[in-house]
Image (cartoon, rainbow, N blue to C red; front, top):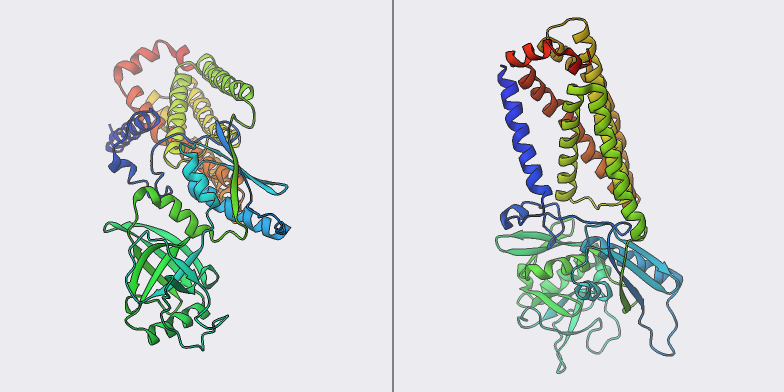
Length: 465
């Protein structure tokens, strides 16, 4: 037996065992979930995520918080607020959510929501980021009052002398706010603390440079919605020529998702408040979801029966490969995690067709080889080698389509297209593994046993020969 067959068999067994452990709803150690660095902060776990069309959801309605006599927000302001809410929802939920504007309301339908109160708090928070000046160190989580005007002036310009401005009412001067930042995001923890990565626009960079020159012993504190995140000596704050700056902060891991969402989404142009929170079923309806589940089971059973009835022993081998494909696809969907939606199920079904096509191509070639009285082991090698080119090209074409959908969905911010591409990539890789990495060494192991060959030579009908 070839060494490559042994190693492929061992690798296949390890991958299948891991896939089974992932698919089963069992507790997973924290060190394993900690390895899922691609998942959002605070959501690193191995769990099913259902989209709004197939899973139970919370419907959160946000409306402008306008006082009596105030003008309602304009269409442009509501569109900008919608974009901010959509960004926050994406940061807070790795499942596919639906965020829509309905008149003067913004409705977010979010699946897989354990604590709606914490989420609504983040969705309606202003998201105001400020770099403020202070003549003393401020503790984290302290709420401060800020102003954008210097004492005795109505506006500030970079040419004015900058001093720390802490008046009797403890009002701190804002050096830079959201308007002076290019991007801001929360970096994963290193050495026990998170960090804020930001880029300063040229005018903001110049303004901070003036402050550093005028007050080398002053403090610059970073606040989020008036709450202090970190306070540093102005001499400790440095940035690259491009304006990039990285600031360490100490926050609780439970606060990380909310802080990350607020930093990355930017400031709300309109103050919002939560009007109501409702529990809702799948957008497709619970009856349709049940029908989809029943139809999927019937389709899978029909495919397995066809393989067994038409190809017999080779059909059994193909059926095992299809089961392995299903396990790997589900495991990848759970780890990535890909939201379980109707579109993504269709994507996995399309990938399963490529797996089924490859397996049938191998089975047909093997049947012809056996009918031509080729030795069984030689017929197996010839069948897999002959089918490899068509299998490779089919999977490569599907992979290119999947990657295109992935990239286009990301570029145009279309979550449905993006996740369809991701599910197709996962399904295509699973299909290729099940067809060539799992099925080929398994066939070599089974049919390479002399006793099995002798038994099958007397029962060639099992090979449909």
